[in-house]
Length: 366
Image 1 (cartoon, helix red, strand yellow):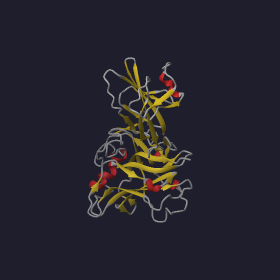
Image 2 (cartoon, helix red, strand yellow; image 1 turned 120 degrees about the horizontal axis):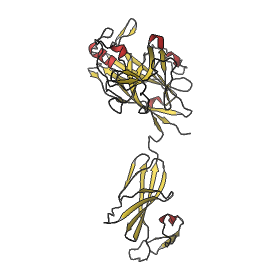
Image 3 (tube, rainbow, N blue to C red; image 1 turned 30 degrees about the vertical axis):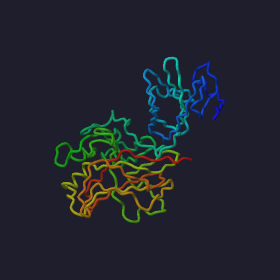
Image 4 (tube, rainbow, N blue to C red; image 1 turned 180 degrees about the vertical axis):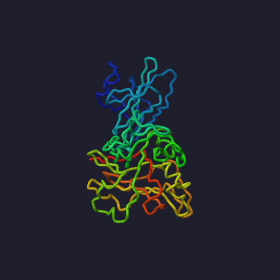
């Protein structure tokens, strides 16, 4: 096959004034030409946020390498084996320059980067939440405005409902803690559970011991007929509500949940109010999606069991659990309720606390 010559202007990136702007490609092994011909090495497919690895299998002793984005002239790597993460989808034309002394060889690659499944994900990130001026508690600190009326608790696009009556030293809804305390305070002389309600059994957020997480003092699951499909819900009636404070539209993805120490020890041993769990008992959380019109996005909530003694089970989970929320669909609000089988005349006897971290939603493209 005879040589074919394709005229291009993009060879300026090579910085070699003596080279022509022609690309020579040959399909014959006996072609001999006095030019450094870029060798096409093929196409690579990837997705955003995944590392791309290209091994040209050269490894010539003493050679130096440069991987160049042909469109921007940016040098992406100076290693023989290319490793790079593309965070934006698109087609990237790369040129590998191999220099050995005064000799150059060039190799071309095309990397096609598609959007990964999580390209539009927005995740709660409490790592930068300021607890430096927080209220001290066992094992860490809590948000300074936990007992402040009308204080706004927000992180990124997520607005967490917060209710407080300062004169009564009372709060409901959500707050932030980094306490690593997961001990029982039922019979201690350090203020008991009321003064030590800020822990989580994993001793910190998903990022590890002592990292920030959300604590929620929530409502018990409401009676039948309170949450009716296709009927507007008065969200102001409930404590544990998360609102997406953003003009974009989002689908629910997932969140991580863990049991708080107060209900954990009440279930395990009982206390002045709660009864030690027995066969058939459970402690669960129900999560509802609510749309912009304050209507449920699905007939059934997502349910996760912190404690489950039903059907021969004997489960008390003290770890973080990633809970799939995708069945809730497009949401504007998330509504959380706890449910216990230990219920008395005045309501739930189990302390109605849970902890949460790593809430994730998916932005819907317009």
